[in-house]
Length: 144
Image 1 (cartoon, rainbow, N blue to C red):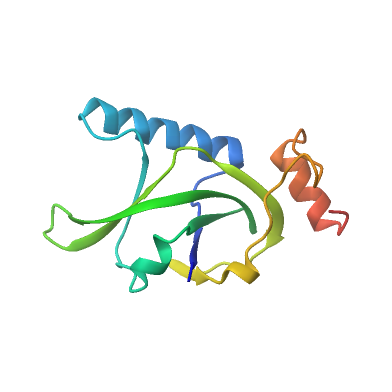
Image 2 (cartoon, rainbow, N blue to C red):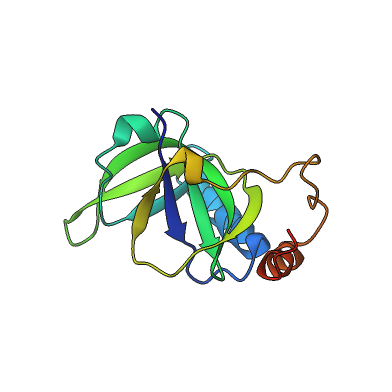
């Protein structure tokens, strides 16, 4: 059964700034001869590995709202310079906008059940052509 993660995108002002950061990470990985995927290293290693790798995504909270996601394609153990075990979450480099959903601040990451995950923004749901900042404001107003 699939499960997702939700994570604060610290420092991101919008989906566009998150995408720019992810492109930077992908370029650095490619320069080191690694796969062209986005990588996010976190201190804790998820226990529900099989469920995450069964179609899970990481949903990014930007400015108090879940605004987008990346599909998770792998989890790898990595060691920091301090020798501490960490988890590299490997994701497709494509950011998928979702219908903005308010989310209170939290630390680290949290599991997100599929039934609680916001739907993707598609041409059928409207708003694909809107900037993420406008989608967020519409959601704040309850107009989304």
